[in-house]
Image (cartoon, rainbow, N blue to C red; front, side):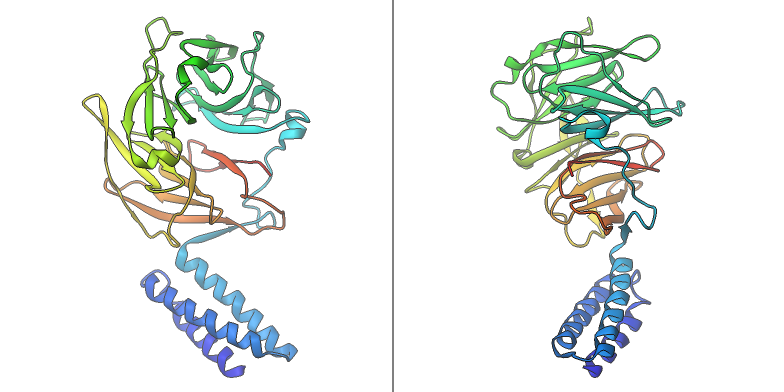
Length: 360
C-alpha cells in the first residue's frame, strides 16, 4: 500500500510542473496515479493509509483541475449563488423555459433579464441594477405557451407554441408595451416545423428559427410597417441542425447541437450562410451534448453548456480562426441537482456574470 501511495505522490509532484506546458503528458500521469490510488484503496485497512490516500486524491484533483482549466464552483467559495427562485419570484406554477438579456446600447450601464415562463403563461423582466421584477404587459393574453425568447432593437420577442411569434415593443422610454402577435408568423406558419430556438438578429430585427425536422435555420424578414414579417423560409441547412438546440451571434452566427457537429460557426455571404470553421482547442474531455451557447459582438468570450459533463465551457474568441478554451466551470457545491436541468444561459456585456436558467 505504501509503495503505491509513495509512487503516486512522486508522480503528482512531477506532474505539477507540466500541467500547462505539456497537458497531454500530465493527463497520462494523472491516469497512472488514479490506477495506483485505486489499487492502494483496495488494499488499505489502516486509518493512516486511508488518510494518505484521501490526501493524495485531493492533491490529484488540484493537478487535474490545473491541467484541464477547471474552475470549481461552490457557494462556500463565493463564485456561484442563487440569483432568484422562480416559484418565489414569479408564482407557484412557475416553469421557466428560456432567458434573454437586453441593454439599450453599448453606453448604457443597466441591463435586464427577460424570462419566458410556461407555467405562469408570462414573461418577466428583472433589472440587474436593483433586481426589480415586473411582469411584461399582455392585456390580450397572447402569451399562452412561451418557449423561446430573444431581445431585439425594437422589443422582446417570444416564440409561443400556441400563438406563434409575438413581440413586446419598447416605447420612447424603453418600457415594455403589451405583447402583440406578428403578422405572417402566427402559429399556422410553423405547422411543418419543430422549432427548438429563436434568435432576433440584424438591425432590422429579422427572425431566425432552428427547425430540427429538416435540420435547418429558417429566416423571416421584417417588413417596413414593423409588425409584419415574411413567412419563415429555409435560410441554411446542415445535418447538425437535426439535433440543433441554440442559435446566437456576434459577427458570425453560431449553432450548438446535442449530436454531430456540436458547435458550428457560419458567416453571411451573398444572402446566405456559409460555414466558417474555427479550430476548437484545449477542450478536455471532448464536448458531447451541447444544449446552449452565448456570445455577442460586445462579449470577449464565447460560452457553451455541455449537458453530459454538466459544465460551462468558456472560449477566448480573439483569434480569427481558433476558439481556445479559457476555462470550464463545474459545480462542486453542496446542493443537489445544480446544472442537471439547464435550459439556457446569458452573460452580461462585461463578461463578469453568467446567468444560468436551471430548472432545479
